[in-house]
Image 1 (cartoon, rainbow, N blue to C red):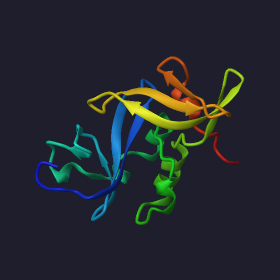
Image 2: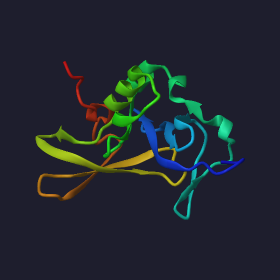
Image 3: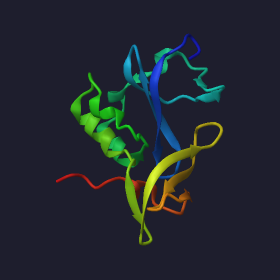
Length: 154
């Protein structure tokens, strides 16, 4: 950040249906999970921002319902064990995780990774694997991004 280093466990981009990054969830080791709406730059294995640490907002700064319009990819399901965040936000964030399998045109795929543009503002592709571990790349228009979310548990 512009005014100092923030040690993090992870940074997850949250992406909307237009494949644009709405914000990032940053697990800052000293602050706990925060949202960041600024710009990030990847340099030599680290993320940099010109914005100050005061731009890191509590997760609750975003209405719970907003997460219904977003996806993120967290193969470790890090938010399951998050402490200090109201359970409604934790559940909403978990529901936006697209880690796992999805069906498309009669085949099952497992999300393997997300690829972003150099500015980390746009999702370029969803990288998935088929049942025999062949890599398949889906781009905008190939799959409905919000359709990769799991249906709510009843």
